[in-house]
Amino acid sequence: MISVNKQQAQLSEQTVLQKSFTQSFSSFITAFKKTIVLILFVALWEFVPQAGLVEKTFLPPFSEVVRTWWNLLLTGELWRHFEASILRSLFGFLLALAVAIPLGLLIGWYPLARDLLTPILELFRNTAALALLPVFILILGIGEVSKIAIVLFACTWPVLLNTISAVKNVDPLLIKSARSMNFSSFKLFYKVILPASVPTIFTGIRMAGTGAILVLIAAEMVGAKAGLGYFITYAQYNFLIAEMYAGILTISLLGLIINYGLSSAERYFSRWKH
Image (cartoon, rainbow, N blue to C red; front, top):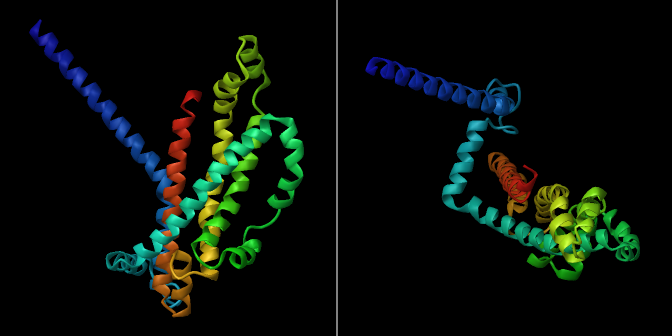
């Protein structure tokens, strides 16, 4: 009897080990698939300048850019510009959410509001944010307010339009079912409309998160004394090519961080779907 129990314990342990190995191998394959193209890109970036296929002066090897990036980080120079950009984009982005989401819910839910506001929205949504940058600078000056305002303007539209679309396209069967249960208007909106709209709203939020960085960097290239856009332009004018690529790499990393954070928030607020 004891021998049988030992054999069963050994078999159980082997099964657990096999499952653990299978899961680890599966995780490795998944990570490999997701990163193989990125690894090849980095390897190509390192190889092409080293092999002399491209002049190193204009495209330094990836290892040199990383060393320069690390040195800039240690000296605090890169962090100063990163902090300036992230604070501007964050303030503008949060203000856009505070304005666009309530306004989009209002327009999507009330036909009168939609009829009154649609013409003016169509006018401004087709105006490029960077085309208005000179106007923002003339009115608000070259300081922080104009940078935050241009981010606010650029981020508002994707969030607003996706919020309106989300509310308008909620499944009518959900609304009918809720009304058949005698939901009040507020409860219907809070329990049905808002949760059902979250995935589409977050599509607009993620678009706005990307747009916040792109528009801000372009604005900083025109008129700023700090920020990643200013840093890249300064490095280009002074022929600090490795520093320029380090700034570009920082923007890419910042975009990845923002996208990952917004994706995590979307999964949290959309957990009801699962």
